[in-house]
Length: 298
Ligand code: ATP
Image (cartoon, rainbow, N blue to C red; front, side, top):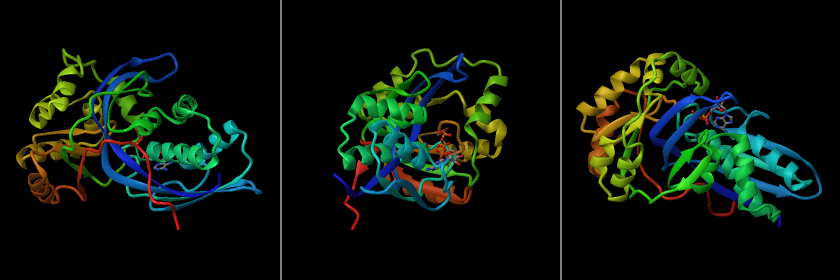
C-alpha cells in the first residue's frame, strides 16, 4: 500500500518526574507520568514506489536536514523493513522546539506510525516500539499517548488510568533549553528526595478527576536545574500561583511551564494574565491519545 497520509503529533507534559542517578550508559534512570496535550505538529507523509530517498520539507522552526527526527525515523523504518521507496515528509511545526514538550519525539513517532500504515510492512507493535526507543527516550510514549507512566530512561511506557481532559495553560519564555545541559546542571545540585508515595498520589488524583489534588502532587526533579539555567522561570512559576493556577510546574527539562486551571474559563483568564509575563501562552487540555492519523492529504 502506497499513498499519502496526514498525522497529528501532540505535545506532552511531565506531571511527575523523578530522576535517579546517571546509569552506566550515560542516561539517568527516571520515573515519570507523561500526559499528552492538545498542541499538534502536522506530519504529511507520502510513500512512492519505484524510486528512493527521503525528502523533508519543514515549515517552522526545526532542523531541515538529516538531523531532523522525522528524517531519522524514516531512514530507520525503511532500513528495518527493507523497503526501497521514496518518502516525502512535510512537517509543519506548531510545538515550540527544545521546549520540554517532546515535539521532535512526537514527530518521529508519527513518521513510524505513518510508514507502518502506508507501507503495509507489518513490523508490528513490538518492533515499532523498539525502533521508537532507538530514536529517543520520549518517542515510545507518543505511540501510546494519553496518560502513561515512563520508566527506564523514559522509554518503558505503561498506560495508566486516563486523566480527564483537564484544562492546562502552557507558557513558554521564548527560549530553548538543552536537555543534556539541564541534566548536567542537575548532576551538580545536591540530591533531592522524591515524594514519599512516588507518583501514586498523583495518579490517584488524576483517576478520580481531582484537578486540585493532582496539582498538589506535581513534581519535577529537574525544575531547580532548569531554573538555575533560566532564572526567569522562577518568576513565571510565581506569577502562575498569583494568577489563579491550581499548580504550576516546569515540563520535563523545560523551559515550558504548565499550569493546571480549575476549568476552561479560568484557563482563559489565567492565559490572559500570563500573557504579560511570557511571549508564548497557549490554552490547551489533556488529550487521551498519542499520534493519530488524520484526514488523508489531498
Ligand atoms: P527532548 O527532551 O527530547 O530534548 P524537547 O521537547 O525539549 O525534547 P524537541 O523540540 O523535541 O525538544 O527538540 C530537541 C532537539 O531536537 C532540538 O535541539 C532540535 O534541534 C532537534 N530536533 C530534531 N528534529 C526535530 C523536530 N522534528 N522537531 C523539533 N526539534 C527537532
